[in-house]
Length: 529
Image 1 (cartoon, rainbow, N blue to C red):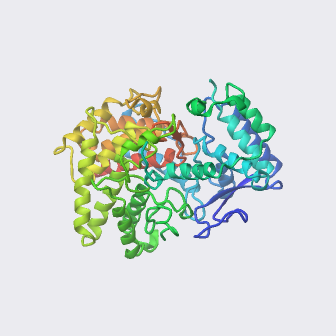
Image 2: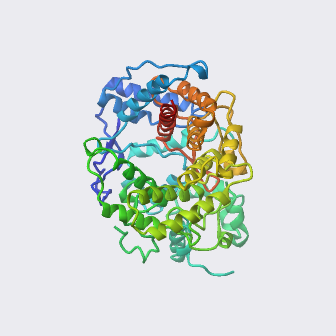
Image 3: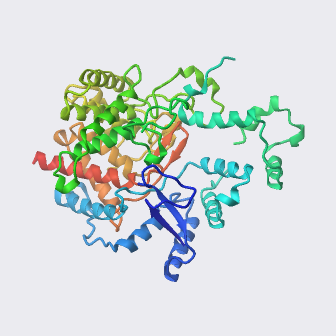
């Protein structure tokens, strides 16, 4: 039976620079669990497979089963399901929040983080399998149980139908990590072992016998088959000192908005009593974070993801993929720019003297970029989430932080009108991945808890509670009624995306954003009353 290990390592193949803090590893133990627990795991697996076309996410059920056993948590507060908006009161919202927070806190690992499934990216695991196969290390690295689960995962997610020179150091980091090993293998003319499996794949992939292929003509046809890091400058890496990554410190790839959001959290926590949250982080480390953020700034005051924008978009002509859009350049986005903008403004309020002029210039340019990127209908396109609901949430937050208000900003008024125009009759918001592909808002067939929370938060921060709270009462009713018996909110369709064609799951969003939205709504109601 599988069990989740947190901050413990995972065999001789794993290394860590910070004692595996935040590292989650699934380990198979043939003797683990009672017969009843194993039977329950088999039931959950079987039901997921049977319903895989309706519910594509595992919901991290095995982790939740493990934590429920370890922590013996039960939700004592009864669920309240308001029939209409008039039944949504401060007490109703508080009960919902207590149920959600009780359950969500039980999912916190002992080292302080929340583990979560990051599924949806179907092309990463096959690349690992290919590499292990051609290097002859498949059996060494992957146990029989790991291979069984890999096959199960692939099956469960199968669709139901179906010249100039530029050095690659200037490419987006993800693109570099693909191009450089490919170029090395090509330069070495490396050929893996020709096995029966390889021969069968050749027969399946190509429409003519492999030895008859004219590769000069076939390339396009083939593509259509459906502290600072050591030696960072040598490998063209951006600085990482003072940053946070998308996952753990062992990852090593600093990210602008991850660093900004972590900095915001630390600055907010510094306002609480140390008796509640522990001693605040040292000022020197905050300065390191700000230094790192400012190092991410593009020449026009905008922010990309892992690095500054290093080259022109003209290089997208080198994009070898027919699936992924804009993979050569690390483009600036509203989300990253907004996150950094908010963090620097919050930092400036507490530490007004540090790099004052540079921060002021950054705030001015970043807020102008956000205003300029707004669409005519009042929305912002989301680069890293689905899609206009997500982008508009960050656009509004960034402008509010920089001093704009509903009264003095045409951009904010347009944004609020856009969101209100997309509210469903039931009170929520729902947007599909097709918005990313078509670059036009595509409404889902029903509400999504995370989309609803993003829209609520944008409206709340733009002053909707003070103007007319009725749409927010309607939305709060929707969220509270979506809440499960466990206190959590439902796992629905993917809300993460990138490159307009890659969709994935942020497992903790289902709880974090609804809790945030309901909590902020209640706080504003209390302040108003």
